Length: 305
Image (tube, rainbow, N blue to C red; front, side):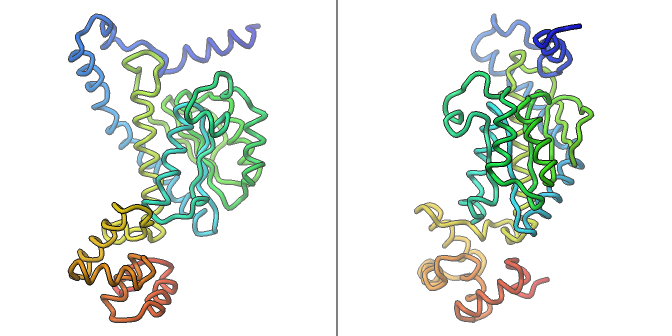
């Protein structure tokens, strides 16, 4: 009977992401331009692989939207590069969509410090995975999305098992072939061998980032954080975002710059409220009430649907 180390070795042999790529076997002898062209050639197929996974991605979005509507969260869980991608996507949701910081969160094995500095062995810490789910008070309201290129990362697997036991909806995102694993949705984006064998921060990470972008963005659209294709719920936390907010108000109401700035200030620096005030000719309190009655959907508040 093989020991634990040999078992891991045998598991790795079966992974597409661990195989050698015949198209890049001479990359070590290539010029700088040739190296970049080889890498770019590999990247070109990633979008098509992601597109083929849309049916599964859509089911994941529906779970996340269900969680949001119940006051729950989207919780990303990962190790290494996969964990960092979850943390990045979660961090972008508040400024982009005006979401509460605890609406989408990213949990990485080893904790915050491993976002910046890799630590060996933390991806194998299954007791930490279980404890992290308990510490973050995972509940039936939440959707927990585990990210692992290899489909075998112990931290992620145990985190998802624990989350499921705690009643949460679970999604498993991998860049290898599907496996028999008890989750609500499994997303497999099989991008093939990497330009450098086993370096899943390349194509696999690109596919993961695209899918996380799709899940968080589509979910936010579905709960009213976007009007037409504009981020009307953005949080004006920087000079750039303040000016973007004014630009959106100008675009949707026909106001000039000074009028948009006035509306923005009088609305409490809220783009949606500004637009309702301008389009319906109401005061801030009435605009806020209409938006509340429309569950935050600007089109509904304006009577467009």
